[in-house]
Image (cartoon, rainbow, N blue to C red; front, side):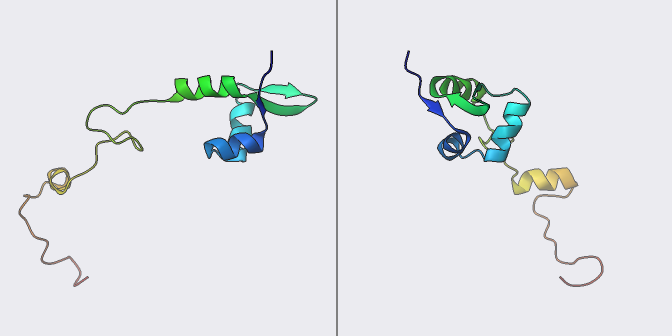
Length: 96
């Protein structure tokens, strides 16, 4: 069996996950890894499978980066309890 092994730096450049975060994932046993002569390496196929299981699709109306629906001016006005057409013409304590 011929496995393609990746070092921490190779995995970092391939995934854009920092090396320190990769070491943290290894320490917490959250990513599949092997130790070969005291060196941490990753099987390419295991990493591909792991990344697939980590992938989460956003639900409807949510953004992929935050998982939250983006705020609109109407949302902010509702949150603050002000009418949508209200203009902030003056600020407490003087001009801005």
